[in-house]
Length: 83
Image (cartoon, rainbow, N blue to C red; front, side, top):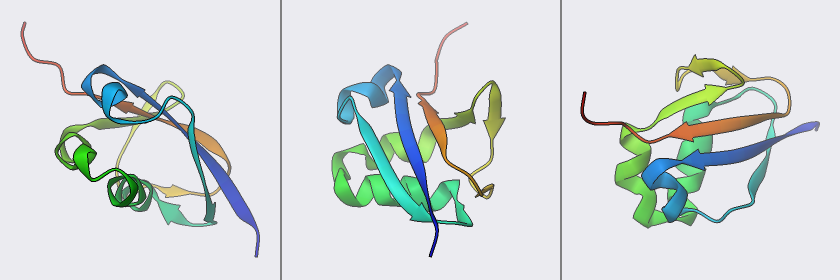
């Protein structure tokens, strides 16, 4: 079975909850939501932040339902308050 590597980059409040270098190997066709669930399983203190964060790959914001078909870097962005 072929796997893909998903590297995690976190910014804002989430960055303080996760290790600096974080990556996972997944089977093809996992969703962004699956990746977030894996992070919460390993780092339960990040649960609230994962529920509220935005996710991006490259310059594009992606949905949690998006299927990952190739290795990538998933960027986690903390919600920003204020104006």
